[in-house]
Image (cartoon, rainbow, N blue to C red; front, side, top):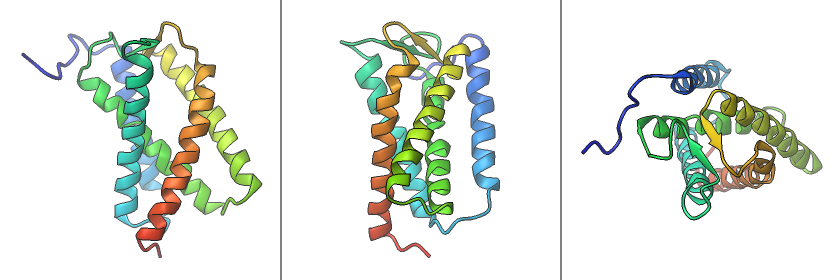
Length: 166
């Protein structure tokens, strides 16, 4: 029994995930360095992957079963790779947050703008078959992104308290 099977053939959704992973991690690692210790980078990567996995478990798993990830409802290797996509987006989100020193009401506007971007990106993933919606629409994800991105900023500030940033 293969616990994490590979797809029988690599289709559009798998290629989309592979190309998105390469592009998103490349963009992050080629950006000018911010003063993030590697420990913060790793913890944000893990946090974003964990949050996305929890959300998928809640919304895509029983009893709700609102959408499928990748080709079917079964867990496979590319599902894990999909969760790795959330990390660079979270890092880029925090990178811009720090670069532009966003504070006060602008934090709310920033989260709103990034949540809109996230919904648009999710809609693109639907076009490529990464998500197959049953009883879900991309717009339903907007409040989820508002909540999660607020959590990411809160988590980042907590990390900064405990991990020395330059």
